[in-house]
Image 1 (spheres, helix red, strand yellow):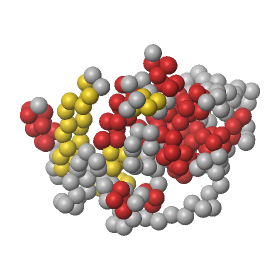
Image 2 (tube, rainbow, N blue to C red):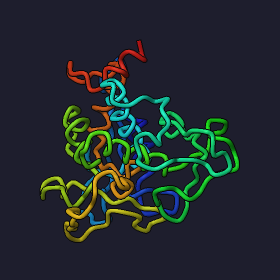
Image 3 (cartoon, rainbow, N blue to C red):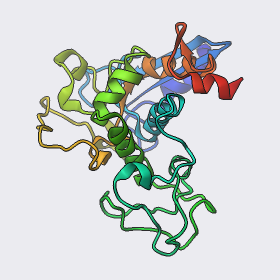
Image 4 (cartoon, helix red, strand yellow):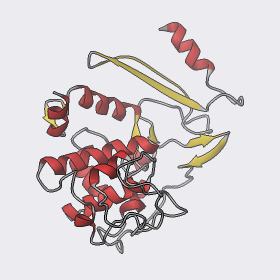
Amino acid sequence: MKNLDGSLSAMIGDGATQVVGLGVMAFKGGKEIYSYFGGRRHINPDKKMTRTTLLRAASVSKMFTVFSIMQLVEQGKINLHDDASKYLGFELRNPNFPHAPITLEMLACHTSSLRDGEDYTLPPQNFSATEPGKFFRYCNLNYGILGTIIERVTGERFDIYQQNHILKQLEISGGYVVSNFDAKTFNRLGTIYRTNAAQIDDYKFRPRSNLSRYKIGTNATIFAPQGGLRLSFEDLGKTLQMLMNRGEYKGRATCSTLKRRCA
């Protein structure tokens, strides 16, 4: 493992092909067998990268949205093969194929025929010329719609629902809305960089936001179900253990549907 430590350490630095900081965890047989954390979570030299550093998980967040979708399937509140329009309060249709329903499964699998535009408006405005269900095309808005469906079915704001029904069960202390973090959690937040420039979460102070006017079920994309979850390496390790244990974490069934589908 010392050779691996050295190889990872060489990836950290200020060079054009290096990164500010990184972390690695490896599991075998359901248990952590290796970890390495080096460099910084911010260009500030006092902010070291550790296993509890919170980073924006980007599209790994989509997995957590699906966890909630599958919980609701398990509870009989939604069906993956249903027309998504049934839950949205508007008809979701590709205008090129007005009679072809777009299902929840299509949204989750990126076969809905939706395309990302300059913003995430609902009802959506951008569609491909391919019939829904026939072709894979990656689209973040699919998950904004799934987040909105979660809100409309449960009556809870997306970030709060995720906190209560997914993150707490996995003992994850992160979340989607940085302004909701307490001081201790906020101080573990790391910055994402691209080509030596801060891309996101480069905060000097804890931000504030007022979500009191947000109407649940209108457009959950503001909480970024597609990519806005902040969590740590340790949190990802807990999630991996849950997946390897077929939907259970510390004996608790986070999503029994996962267990049935993996059996």
